[in-house]
Image (spheres, rainbow, N blue to C red):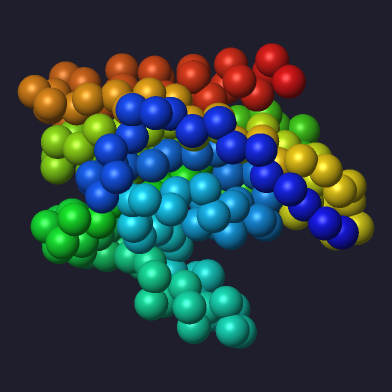
Length: 187
């Protein structure tokens, strides 16, 4: 099964600038697609620790990601420290805010807070990204999907300067959710 990607990238992304990349999570190929569409802004994923147990994939995942045990408050707090260290080195961070791949019939699951807390805490712009075709090309249901183009839509970065978590997290989360959701329902 061959795939081609059709990338619509926002011209407002500055190379080698730190961002919080947030995309919908719909498929087993989301991670590989994200790696292929952001060449000028090196980044690390924040992802669940359980994925590190997958043979071969887990080896690379542990070395390219900030791992979080979502059941542990200590682990969730340590993500902030590790993210700050990566941002201090000029890297960006990528979080799939749904936190999981939703069932086939779910368009977009409710977003968790992590991406928005980190973006506001570290005052970095958040970039909504819509993966428009991953679910229909290669979903989590084995033997489903079909070859075709994988379209990715980058939205302009949303500044978090002068935002605080208490007053702005929910509105920022809703703004990013609505942007991605509207792309998905327009398909």
